[in-house]
Image 1 (cartoon, rainbow, N blue to C red):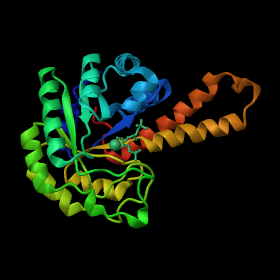
Image 2: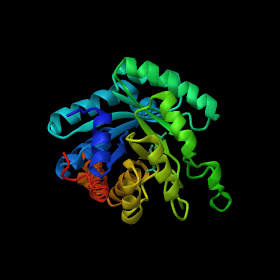
Image 3: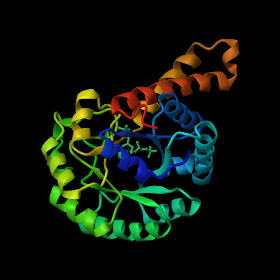
Image 4: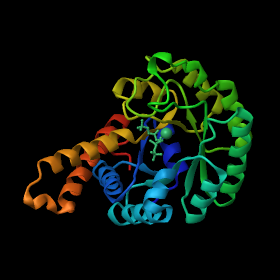
Length: 288
Ligand code: G3H
Ligand code: 13P
Ligand code: ZN
């Protein structure tokens, strides 16, 4: 059942667990997330990036996710969300299609510009009943920096700015940088727990999102949930499961597997296994 993202996140934050926001890019990954959530009785968020909007069609992905959530998991709360929308135009397009939640990512812009455009996005979206996630500080991507060179201070969220940003923009959720990074990447040796604690204190009950969580395991996950993280974004781990499974299936193909549905079905199940494993780590199993 398609459910309001803010409601899913708020329940998680209040309940002391987190949900997964999983990136879908096609039929197989969408179905894997829906089935994983159903089998674990867990709320989840399914999200689509700009690149996936180009690949699968923003409208096509919208109807695919909506149909799968409503038909296959009618009693499981499933949020639909646009991940890393980088311009006001993309947000407009997504909201007009019907996506009920979006992220505007102005994190690479100057603070004043990020604040100004995020506020503009919130005004536009709230008018239409669409939730908005903003990002402050910036979560690095694998490949854009050398791990040895990384100056984490350049990326981190400033707790004082976070307070002002949330107040002035009216966002519904905040993505933070506390030593997390996109991709399988050596994250900062230790996440900056004290910084997260301060951000959480400054922004009250606004749910906090941790991007780049594919390689976050139990210990860290628990520590950040305690300090306000209500949602972990997962993409790379799903891609790897899909591609690795596909590659070995193609290599070992028998005549039967010339039917793409056999091969893609197995890849879907490999993604589902990762979704279920993550749900267990985040503690959202049984919360639907
Ligand atoms: O955090 C963002 C995604 O992992 C990047 O996804 O390749 O679909 O833009 P994309
Ligand atoms: P990973 O690819 O590191 O899992 O990050 C996903 C993400 O942050 C999507 O917004
Ligand atoms: Zn991200």
